[in-house]
Image 1 (cartoon, protein in one colour):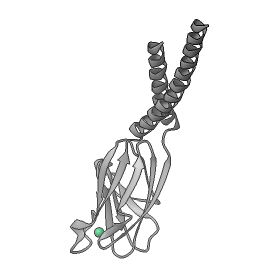
Image 2 (cartoon, protein in one colour):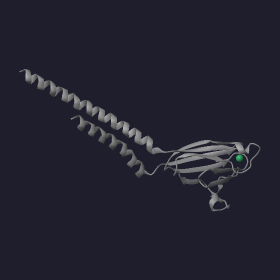
Image 3 (cartoon, helix red, strand yellow):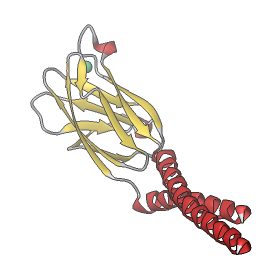
Amino acid sequence: MKFKLLLIYVLIVLLCALIPTLAASSSGGKTKEFYIKARQYAYEPAKITVNKGDKVHIKLASLDVIHGFFLEGHDIDALIEPGVQKFKLRHPSQGREFTDVDEIVFTADYPGKFRFRCSHTCGTMHPFMLGEMIVNPNYPFLAGSGGAVGMLISAIIAMFVSGREDKSAVTAKELQHE
Ligand SMILES: [Cu+2]
């Protein structure tokens, strides 16, 4: 009986850990939009956070002089002019030419921390104009919470089953006495 209980327990925990994984792979991430303003010598916001698989949209604007926006590990380099709604974008691996765009769009494929920095000399503190994008691996968290839910459900079932066993044991004893 104890082995059977353990088996049920393990099965439920596994099942609950599996459900979010399947859900995450089928949903394919969310759309995350950011509007980053550049000025001497910072980005606002300086930190953006997304989950792996999210589709990231970034709009850029400059509040003073011409700034750049180079995003590490994503082949993205932009040139942001003040007073203009569009900005210029290039993919360094594909050439030096810039194209006018309204936004940068890409999918966050790799979890990790990616820095972005100004790639156009904008003044004395230019080298310190930095920011970062955090890409969280969404799977371990969901699997963890799924497993926790599974453990809770199993614990409740185990309590319920053992409670019944106790009662039947008592009844058997009582019957022996009679
Ligand atoms: Cu700058």
